[in-house]
Amino acid sequence: MQLLNLQDIYEYVENNIGVFHNKRLKSLEKLKLDKILKRKNPYLFKAKNILTSQDIVKVILDAYLSSQEETIFGEFLEGLSIFINEKVYGGRKSSAEGIDLEFENEEIKYIVSIKSGPN
Image (cartoon, rainbow, N blue to C red; front, top):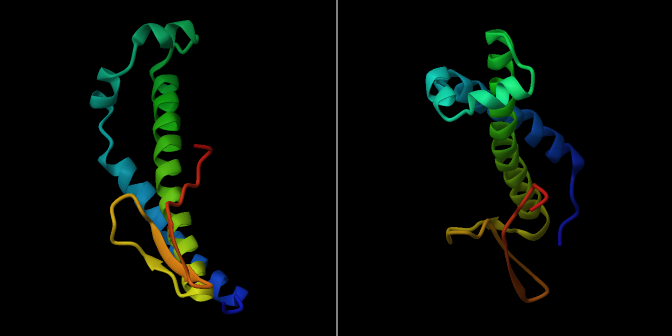
């Protein structure tokens, strides 16, 4: 096991947090309002007292961004976790489907699925 240099983590975050923001922006650029509106229940908007088109668009964008951010930020945290493990244990991104990280410690091989959400 190697000691972790916090400066390495600061540099990783600084060099990679822009990817999170770029993916978020690209996700918005691909968004088509008409496709999202087809999946929405118009009666729900009325029940929630959302009466103007501006309010509808804001609610839809907020929900869409929140969902996308969870996924994109989860990917960022997965990369950070693998980076840290690589520095400490010599771990690596797994090539196996459903497995994110592989490393060994004290002659035990670990295979890890990284989750950043409550589930």
